[in-house]
Length: 371
Image (cartoon, rainbow, N blue to C red):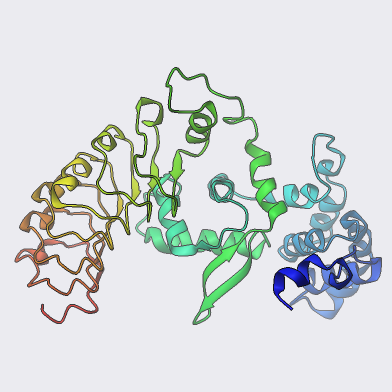
C-alpha cells in the first residue's frame, strides 16, 4: 500500500484526542518539577493540579506551562502563573495562546524580537539554527557593546527560547541543535504579539508590487524567495527598507542591477544561481552588507570592488569550481570573520595580505588541494 493510499483511508488514521486530567498533569509535572527535590515536589503538587486545568487537555499547553514553571522556585511565582490576568484576555484567538503568551511575556525585549521574527518562515519549514542566528544579527537583535561573540550570544538566545518549548523537532549534531521546526500553533502565535505591525495593507502605486508584499517587507524587513523560480526578481523603491533578501536557487541568470537600490541590505543569499564576474559590481554598492552567500554560482572571478563591503562579516564562495583567484582587495574587509572557499578546486592561492584580516576566525578550505 502506498503512503498516499494509507493516508486517504480514514479507518487507518489514529485521531489524537485531548489528554485526560491525569495524563495532562503527569506531562506538566514531569517537566515543571524536573530536578526539584522531594520537599518541593510535595509543595507544588497541589497547585500543579490547579494549573493543569488551564491546559484543557492540550499537550502543547502542558509542555509550554511545564517549561515556564520549571524556571520558578517559589510558591508565589507559581501562584502568579495560576492567577495571571492573561487567562482573562478576550482577544486571545486560541486557547493554546494563553500559556504561550504567559511564556512570551517573561522574555526580554530582544528575545521577543528573536522569537517573533521566526514567523517569517512558512509553516512546516525546517529552520537551520546557524543561519537563523545570522538573520537575527542582520536584524540588529544581537548587537551589543560587550566583547562576547555575536554567534555565542545568538546561540544563547536560541537555547533560551528552545527551553521554553517554543521550538520542537530538533536535529542534533554532537549534542548541539542543528535545526528545528515550529508547531503550527506556535507559528500562528508568533504573529499575535505583533499583529498590529504591518497588518494593514500598505497603499502602493507600483504596478508590480502587491500591497501584501509591501506590508510583509515593512513587517519583517525580509524577503525570502528561496527555491522558487524567480527569473526576474522585481526590485523597486517599495522594497528599499528590506534588510534580508534570499534568492537561493531561484534560477537567476544574472544579478539584477536594481539590487543596488537596497541600501539597507545586511543579509543576501544568492547561492546556487549562475552569474558572471561583472554581475558582482552591483552587490559591491551594498555598503551595509554583513552576510553574503555566493556559493555554487559558477563564478570565475571576484570583482576587486568587493573591498567596498566594509561591514562584511561572513562571505561564502564555496563550490565555485572555476574560481582561480581572490582579489588582493578582499584583504581590506577588516570586519570579516568567516570566509568559506571549500571546493574551489581551481583556486591557485590566497591573497598575499590575508594575514591583515585580524578578525578572521574561520577559513573553510576543504577540497582546495591546489592552494
